[in-house]
Length: 396
Image 1 (tube, rainbow, N blue to C red):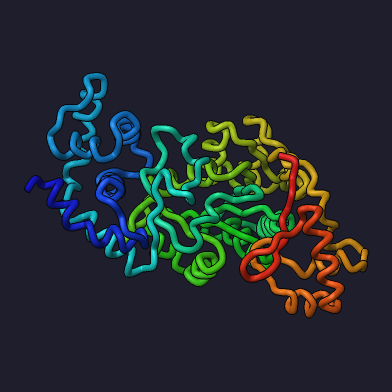
Image 2: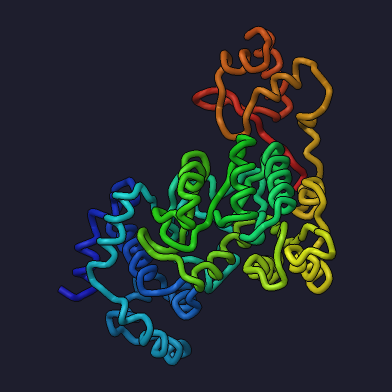
């Protein structure tokens, strides 16, 4: 038995465990090859990406590890790449990675899955070979759009306040907040999204089971409980400077727009902004006092990179090209009619039954039924298996 066949045989059962379903041989071999590639390479490895794009993950692995000749036009590049790949090759690696993920409650998502975020395919040869996920993987395809809110770890109270306000207001109109779970701006955005009952996605530079920073372990667990925590590296992997920089390209790729809330002249969040610009994603920056070094990076983005000036959630919606979300009245509006009360009682994320909506709105169940019927006709709500939820409609 060849080393590759032995590796596949070892990983067969753990593969089904991490995928949560039986796999045919072809599907299992594809998933196994992607896990093996994930272990061989660092995130964003262009040589691996080009080879996989050309011949597929299993055949590419035969070339990388099994000694099969590479296509002539890639041969020189692959020969150099093998020098960094081969020291990492272990036949039992894919088995161990899948087993560790199962123990940590981490799922594996690969291209072609229903939950695979197609927007990351814009990274082309630098797209991830797979993603390791805690939480609801289906949220990787935000139905009402996603915004990356990023910024400095050493944020000021002004920056954290603005990040929280933007995140909460965007969540109230159904947007998903994407960030990196770091201290400062990232954490403020995640916390505000959770407090508003919205959806938030955290991309980690280490394994999805490895909270970093450790001081945000509880926050990351909360995100996994209602949103999704994502990593490009297998369970247990340590965050490194390179992985932080490469993680940023996923934040930018998944989002419809990236907003830098607060950043110093050389802040790492400018790296995320650079990826957004390279992908053609809209880029915004929040201004700060001209005397504040914490906002120097934002001012630099506006001056040198044509970032849009962001002062409100309306600016963010305009930046992302969403237009007005006119279906629902502003939650801060003074209206007190029955429709508004029912809308306020609903969530864009969690389904609520008739009794819950009646209690929250202070209306009789019969009155709630009438309003839900009218909202359903307008496309503003939908009924699922457990109850009703709000649907935010935008001109995109």
